[in-house]
Image (cartoon, rainbow, N blue to C red; front, side, top):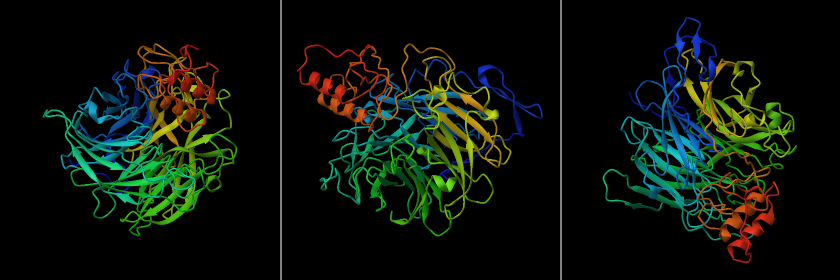
Length: 583
């Protein structure tokens, strides 16, 4: 059957099933219905495959049905996977008719038929994902993959890949949106406001008929714009096959690092054809608009399409008592113009001032039957961090929206929910990124209510093993949880341990690996001045250091400008003593 992208950017699937109740058996979390139907346990398709701190579940999206069993497949990002170079991977999880994991395929620079030349130095493939529907008419859903840290002409411009999928999840064709020559800087900021570009070239990377060619669209991105940090796609615009919204949270509009959005249109073959840069004109300096976004469809049937987007740093810094941030609802017309902009802040949802919008948004679909989709929001709070310096504990909120984009009511989901009992990680730190990603799944259990996938990238079953996990959450119509299952690597194959690093590596324990170089922050193979700059960005919270990209070269337990200076001195041969990350 045809797989189409719905106007609200949610691919809906239906499973024939009765209402179910949870019954937990071991780590597979088998589910049994009240009528005696057994809901099968997960296959061990991921066991032994996810390494410690791959950041599995950094992004999740329901891409649609690849194998024809009537159930959507999930794409799950693991941007710090280092099994191949450049870094990053996307897992395609094939789900069975009870929502269980049946099999999985990994897409990276050595798996899944993506040519290695399609990857960009220093990329973290899988940082963001978007479902595209069937854009090339082959009856199979396609996928967009983003990475805000990829370097094109200059460092950190960001990049996006459009992958045309095969039945087995491997890739038939690849298109890219990459950073081109940056525009001239404006006074006081790095980038001048740019409206659009539609220059594209086709580059054949091989004469083989088994490896896809690469079609490129280059955008005028500046240093560390971090284009494609977040992605979402819709086909709700007349005359546009698919339009992808891509966040560039460190781009400069009228104020420095206020953030911007790019609207990338795909042609009938699924190739990027035109891109338009937009930003509201009232953003605060440093707001970082575009850290998370999702299309909502035409909420009020006025011909414009609504886009939800966060600006987490619009007030204060992450996890500070004043870091409430902003959630914008932008009404955008077919030309890419922002027609209206409204703001939802923490008080509209009933939150206290210590709670703010985080880095995750997802379109759940219509939960309460009013023909308006609900919005899933990742929420950051400083109410009770597990350990000082570790990430704030997060939760997931479902915002029930009205047709004007306002919030009617809200429902919180945390791992303290009794329906999620038995699924939590080894300790509070393991659950501290609950809600790092999410995706609406449609009605998985056949009860007429849409269901939800929630990612936890720091999940670990035992000490030191941050594997990440995806929770399949079966919902009631009021947003409460009936039951859930967990999909993760249940084995204990981690060979190293490290602490998850968020917002500048604070609290990072650096560990070196075979073939890794202490101080080689960008994984280029040698210590260079660009590594010092990257470490300085980590020290001030503009990027994240991974466990295999050591930043804390003086073993102080934190990443500071001193580390950046030490790396720079090594890069220009001022220090005879090599750096030592064996802390």
